[in-house]
Length: 252
Image (cartoon, rainbow, N blue to C red):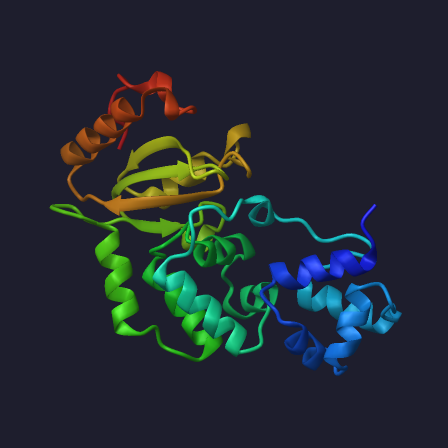
């Protein structure tokens, strides 16, 4: 069974904090943090309570689990994700603290920093910028948008389908991905946010089956339907949720 020290070390790393930064937040020394993580000493109850607020520890010996923590880190980060991680660390903030300050969900921040969401929506970027009190460099934005550009349609934008405030109230085609980045559902709607809400009571909508999403804005109903059908046909059995819906009728 893993010790409190091992759990503390894991939580600190998952939150993107150095020993020195965590020590500063807890008003102790980096040597003390090192001793805790190597089980040469133990934090007191007050220090544990503060670590719970900073790193999401639920109680001694356990780490608060989120769907994002179950996501593998294969695939590498994106330019925006690397920039965000550097700025968050520079500000001395854990992922949990940035989530609380920005109102962007913890899984969404993990997805961005890991590269699973390389081009988050502008509203998401603005929330993160306000929380960190910095502006995203123009070259970082240009690279992210260029990499996600679909010629003739626009930019593929990432969003957190489980965060109601991050769902796009726009017409378009959207895709849900599971924790391994496999596309599992393709849909279309005149209002994506409204359509995603309709999925909330489905058993498969919960993490880890649906971990994150992406969409492209398409105003025209006919083109929306065509793009959706092409994607479903190309994905074939890989779109595990709606693979039987290849010939369904347009619904928005």
